[in-house]
Image (cartoon, rainbow, N blue to C red; front, side, top):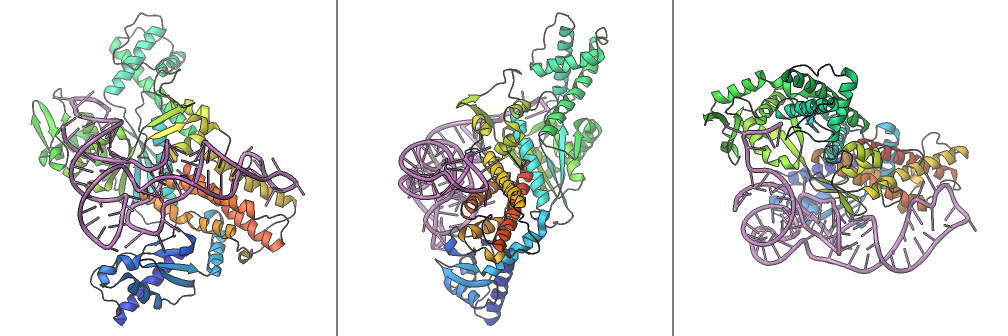
Length: 552
RNA sequence: GUGCUCGUAGUCGAGUGGAUAAGACGUCGGUCUCCGACACCGAAGAGCGCGGGUUCAAAUCCCGCCGAGCACACCA
């Protein structure tokens, strides 16, 4: 149990006692006791605004409520409790509480940062889900970084999580891919062609075609066009999937499930439509079948089956989300590009009409990424002639910088990615700064080891009582709470910021507190603190998918 | 036009109702006989687009206006 929870429990007991005494009169449901680390050190180690929040409920002034609570707390946790401002309660912990807590963390070792399991519901996170018709570009990269970090963070927070990639391997996009590759195939084998007008122009299509030719030669050249397009389409699909998986793997992204849209055609789509037909969720008009989504918050109704009898993308998506709900997840999280936000209403409407709780479906939007080099926006890839492919970014700045930069801003704000900064080896570059702090700690361990200084038995943490030491200790205490919040808010940037702060707090410690050359017990205590610090940096970077090198 | 998102120092940005609005870049001024200067310390600089409202308390909630982005396909 964290100190925070212990304090909250103390407050609850005191409130109950005050109510039993008649000092506080209950008139409504009480809010949770929210404890926070105050903005200023003078306000104690923890603070709560509980008395202010309950002023109305108890019909008493916040300060009086705080007094009643305070007088009924008897605990050896606190050195003192103060009532400040409009009714804040500030808790000052006894130092030995801090040292005891630190020892608990020290004893937890590698497990610090892994929170207790939160029960048996599983949360599904679907992300990236790029069409297998081209290379991953930097926008997908942001989604990949965010999605995998959210998965890591939620797992650390104790949730069961399953990650999924939805492969759009049916429909028009695949036809376009097949036709494009067919044209390149004929072209590379010396024929005159008219490249399809709406085909994929990118150089990667030519690469794909070359690979197909090198494996299969020209044996499809004399097939009837329809047949050839079909075969080449399948070969291209397989090739594209392989490339895509390669890029994701290099970027440190893994999926538990790869879900093919094809498995929905036609049975699962028809089944979903049948349900909607039976309950009036769809109707026919102008030869097409429409979803009555405007009944449930959408601007207008949407076509699910076209005049020509083909299902729309929405039809497949309805079947897909129905399938997700049927799999029994406690929560469904989708990461979508912000340009899809108009899509939420119709999918949620469809889920409601199918009888599911649409609130279980959470959509996280990723705003655009813009790359900047020397202050200029970089829009297109010279080589590929398309949006900048992920692999080009990774080649230029490396995986660590790419991942951290993608994660340091909230997903719903636009991201300006400074390529020069990402590559720079200086404290201006946050990734570099954090990794440097880690490497510096490792260097200290190398030196102390050489000097014969090791931790044996339980360190005497109570020897550390300077500001820099206490600051670092307190910063480490915040970590589990940061994970909890980052998971609840789906906010990897919270961890990105935390680990930066931690590195900065460590730097102050490093400046003020030497290890070599001080009295042995103190040196050992500090060394133990650094061991925890090193582990915490490593753990937090791990959640972000960034490495923690021992030397740089 | 309609809908969604957003608007915080010169710049980038934290902040999901509470105590004097983080931090970084840039600017200015300092620091290597010292476990990594690939680093560190200090200073100046905003009252949160504008105007109303709710609240004991608003950058945070509500309304209006202004400005930006995105979306408004029988494409995915």
